[in-house]
Structure formats: structure tokens, C-alpha cells
Image (spheres, rainbow, N blue to C red):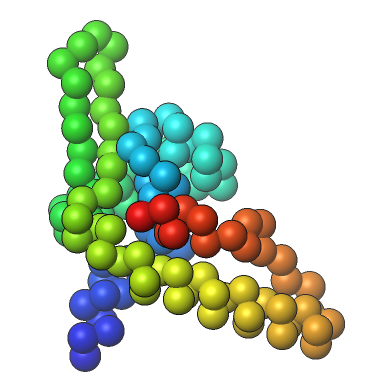
Length: 118
């Protein structure tokens, strides 16, 4: 199924969160780490490598000491905008329904702003 091809690229807990943050512009690894405090350095690095391999983000290395590396969205990465905004909207509606049903669920940041900036 074609949806599997999409989920292979953006599936998992951290990839869409990384893409949301990169929607606002290029970021260094340390900036992403501060923006997503619950992800370990090892997992963040692995996820960045995977979405770079899939050509959703690009990695720019500056020739300086200490080394500086920035990640930013590619055109293909920006093309995920509508999908990610729709997923965010769907998740907000689902959590609101679960909260009305008395479930203890919370969204840390319900805003799709990072996706809208893509």
C-alpha cells in the first residue's frame, strides 16, 4: 500500500516532531535536542540520519572548528506539509474526544505552526 511508503519515512515517535521543528527553519543538533528534551541523543541522531537518507531533510556541514552542522527541510520534506497538518488536526480532535470521555491524555503543544511554516 502507498500509505506504507509514507509511514516508512515519517512513522515513529520522533520524526514528525523533528520535521515540525525544522518547519521553522534550519536547526543545529543541539537546538533540536533542547527543543525535544524527551528524545535521547542516540535516538535523535538515528532519526536525523534516516530522514536525511530519505531526502526529507538535508545536512549542511560548515568547515569550522568546532564543527557546525545544520539540518533543514528539502523540497520533498516541505511537500509533507498537508499530510502533517492533517495528522496534527486529527490528533487534536482525538485527544479532545478522549478528554471528554474522562481519559487522562494531554498534548504538550497542540499547535501545528511548525508544519504550517513548511
